[in-house]
Image (cartoon, rainbow, N blue to C red; front, top):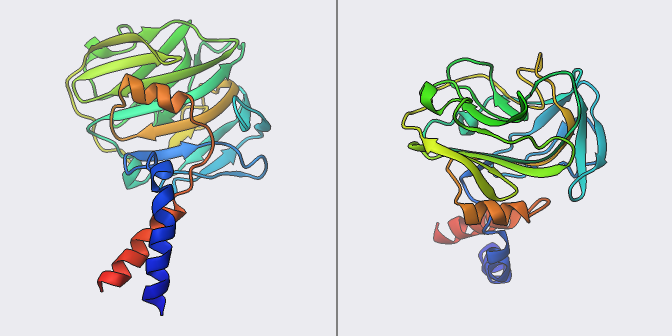
Length: 250
């Protein structure tokens, strides 16, 4: 009887598989921030890299749905280290952000660890501009070379990618900086923070929405697609389909 139910379930789920295909194994973290309450931020990826709210950020209206507003004085989201976030070969970091005014000249958007082995980061405010950084990569592709224009004051979609050979920075779906950057990231057991460096400094002033991390470099077309994609896409139908298919085969 159970197998018959599984067969029916598979046929019922097949028509919606295309609508959830955007969630794949390379998306290792996705915060839509649509909880609108509580002290936790749920990860909408397949990896359950849920976040813990630190300080007292406010739930506010975001670019779409809800978002978190950080005060620049202790607010952030802590994501404990996991195998899926220990990225070495390629990466994409992205976020909708409305950065506010502050005396601090460096506001971390996404950062794993501090300035140490295994660090990767995306800054919506960095000495008057924007930047993607990696501690382990050559100085020639550091912040002096890959620094974009200021985006403070309004909503912008900030994306940084690295494919193992090239590093790129995008704003609102358009490439603003790129360069050769051959290398490999080293392993790190440090957590990821949204809105600060290690929950101790470089606190972000502003509103953050739709934070994503991939373990590959997205193409420009994929970046533009993500830019227009908001909210959670459930992976539960995929999990149920995989479970039933396994039971049928056995």
